[in-house]
Amino acid sequence: MAWRGQLSRNLKELRILFCQKSDSSASARSFVEKNYKDLKTLNPKFPILVRECSGIEPQMWARYDMGVERGIRLEGLTEPQILKALEDLVKAGASLKA
Image (tube, rainbow, N blue to C red):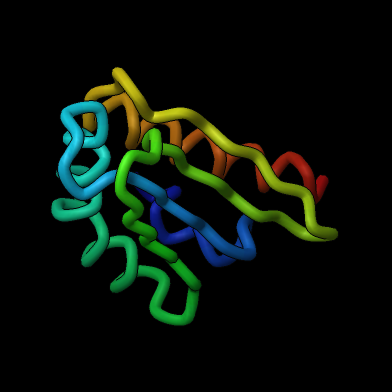
C-alpha cells in the first residue's frame, strides 16, 4: 500500500465522478467514504476532486504531466477492484515519467 503515498508524485489530479443515488455508483460512493481521508492524509496538497452528478456513470480520471489523462469506468466494480484500478493509474504515472 506504499503506492497510496505516491499519488502526488505520479499524478497531477484525481477525479472521481458518480451519481448520488444510483445502484451503479454504490461502490464508488463507498470507496470515497472509506478511502478519501486516508488518501488525503498521505497526500495533503494533492487535488482529489469528488464530483456528484445525477444519472452519471461512475468514473475515475487521472491527470498526468503534459495534460495526459486516463479514465476508468467504475460501473460493476467492487471496492477492492476500484482500489486496484487506482493503484494501476498511479503506477502508470510512474512509467510515464520514465
